[in-house]
Image (cartoon, rainbow over all chains, first blue to last red; front, top):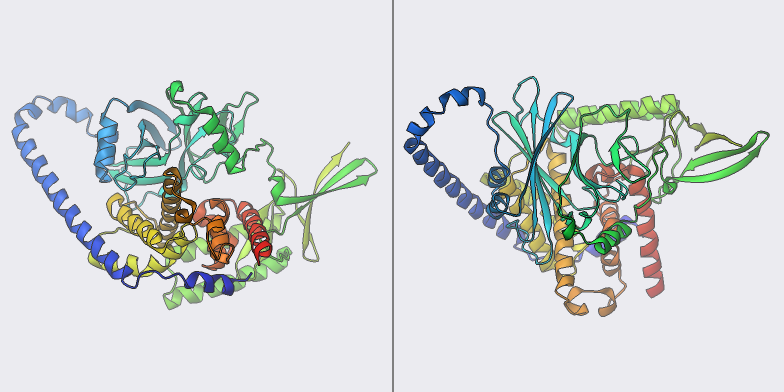
Length: 391
Length: 158
């Protein structure tokens, strides 16, 4: 199968001709309704404020020290136009947590969570329970966090479950989505994930940290299954234990979920999964040596580059990106990030911690060394990493 | 930050992403109407949730992920309602059972998303990894396994 065949098959799907126009009209109509709702909300708030001025005067002394006002989880849901969810956060099934961890430059507060079906106005499927959690973030130096400058994607907020691999139960496998917004200098995360109540007979965590998908360079799992951050993980990190009701657990569904991910395995070793490497054992005078070759899966006929070869590619790519930038087809931010990616990859290839191959489409593929301290060797387009003698 | 709401932005988003997202949803859903519903709901969610996007790439990644989730939800919802197989569009119930589209839809979610982004959108492994928030090696593995499953399904039938 090639891309042309695939595209032709999908291009034959008969979508309705007026889809774009119909959809744009629907969205414009909804946008106008939202604008009207927002104006009405603002008006009613103004009225209420006038009525309660006398009461507020009595609280002036308090308000000086409480200048930084936090939203409640219910208000955060309101800000995302989720009235049903806002009600649920204010209702009896919501779990208030309000625990704070100071980490790096931030105070991270897990405010609360609630689980239930049909709480998202756009997710009316029966039988699909979700869990929603609200977390707030403020800078310890008092500087306000702003939508325009806060790098939302630099951090991950994800559930994890003791006894299951962090690669098996997390945002990605749970189909989660996170929304963020700043208000009064505080940044709020609203996480929407498949319900985590099925895991409630185990220790269930909510992790917030700097980085992407969970890996053994971020988390370590103890023999009893408890999860913690690696001692040498230096990024922003907070791990909260969730007080879920064990009576709501569904161990069979939890096991089935984890099995279905196909990602049950976990090793605290800084090694890659077996999927990533072909392993060859060689007898040596001292015993046995393992040779690991990054697999060339994905159908890519990967030819790994020497540091010199990859440096030439990086230079050519940078020149191409510069042309795109100057032609206006690439934003400055995308250009900067792409160049940074290239330079980081080149640094890794040069010190042997990464192996890089150039793909058919002009992109590049990198893989990291299988263990800490292991260095790749590239020879005639293939790459190996000798892990060491195994007596 | 990219926001969503004015007429111009609505026009841009719908024009720019409709085709991509419709085909992506159709990699999970047999019915073009279901795929259209999924994409409309994702756009509506974008309008009401107003997530903050760092740049256009972040915006696109959000839309791709939201569409995959929504399409999976619709598919699961149909399964929960115990619809007859022919309404679910199971490959075994269709005359063109094991054609390419049916085979892709028969793949587990984790394989079909990678397969579709690679073959239809022409994304590299690295781009897919960034978009889906997965390690590049995992994407490579899923692509290889998804391709192998497709090969078997198509070979067995053709």
